[in-house]
Length: 324
Image (tube, rainbow, N blue to C red; front, side):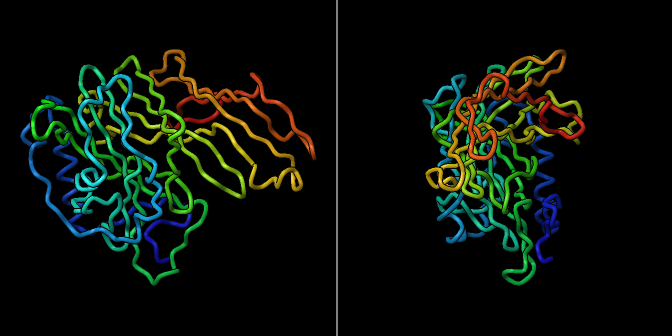
């Protein structure tokens, strides 16, 4: 297989030696920085790199992922845009575009941005997904429903809003997990709002609403991400600031597949995501409560109710949320 990612979708992304050294240097700086705005390392200008690949941005999965601001973060200062996030992570000048080719045929695409406040500090994080690097001929890459993309992030903290640079670069992580299918990230659903939960230890759990389409069925879900303030990490060499924590289903609509009931009964469901404390665990339980209808048998449907709710808890060994 020509792609650097294994057919199972769990392979590590390759990079050239120079890129690895650069990422290591930036990541080390991230761990060493103080969260206090105005750190000199945060003020350093980022170098520009290669230009964007025009073909990547036209149908990118980030088209609807405009930066989001939580109720805990003021929106009077515009956060860094997609191009600034790409530059912070990949040192490329996308010339204002939300996607760019970064290395050996790999494309980086801005996915989602979120502003929030935690312990009196105002943060903004931009997330970017990247495809695997390519070394073979076009068409030789093994891409299928289990082929994920890499997820990376760049985080900024807000400084003096009257300054020329009100958002100061805090740090970046070249990988916080893998997600998606067919080597694409799920689309962010702008109709639903993100959900947040603040833990007793000072972490933030973020649920980003997404939507995907498979076999004539529109699937609603939430991508779960966990933010640990850099100074609260127990092991700076192993613990991530941001970490992908899984995906939970939150509804389906088989309208395109059911053909007005001629092929199968038409059903539609919606799920409300609810965070709740879970015993002595720091990370909360995630419950999805469903309404609507589902198929109950050949040619039959039924209404969804309280008994259909699905609860998820964090599995530390798998490092993601799993259904109970």
